[in-house]
Length: 285
Image 1 (tube, one colour):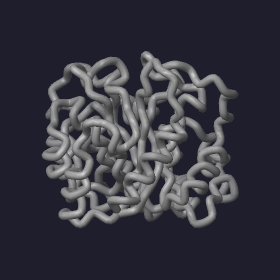
Image 2 (cartoon, rainbow, N blue to C red):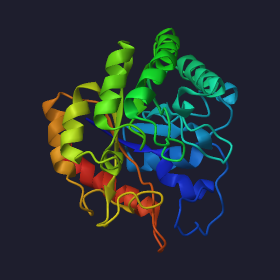
Image 3 (cartoon, rainbow, N blue to C red):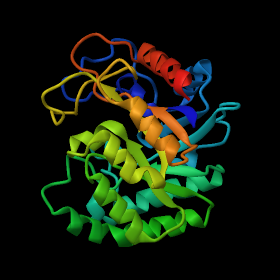
């Protein structure tokens, strides 16, 4: 396994606030990747997943803009920010979302990337539709996206994004029947939909291409607005060492990317949380 960071960890510094978060008091970063690349390189991580919502338009991105030296850079598509952005594939109901994904697939292929995280929905638009109906409708657009990605040598890794359970995501990938299709495993999003974190990991492990690893503080409500408050890996209550054991047993050798989501209302330094998290990962990988 390889150490990594998902750039959503820097969301406050890009100007995005989750429910209940205190704003970042420093200057807002421009929508380009250089501050994230600089920090990731300083930490010496292997992988960096860049949230596309914090980047220029895909056609404007050059290899020079993403140059991180030995740092491997990939795109992470589908986060709904700013307010008019797509919630991934919008439950398979909006062709415009599929067209937007196609643009990022083409950019990833042009830039020689090998895998991209995508989402199909989000808690904000998921609604109460039965999961089997949602999965059935998503099969066709996921096949089209995977076929386009295959044409440029790219794999797609669908995240459990607070929209599909482990069983639902497993079913979607199985029904799509595409060799370049897998899963981005988000540890906290498993429990937000009622999955046990370790057993959900076990269910998805054979399909996992990317891990977004979160730890969280004790809470009585994992579905509070924005999800549970995150902390540095190993400082919370998530059974992350068991998760890593399950992934290792399954033969996973891809990136384990630290992701920090909700930060709560208090003062917090996300850069320090990332540094602590990477140190924790290095001791275990």
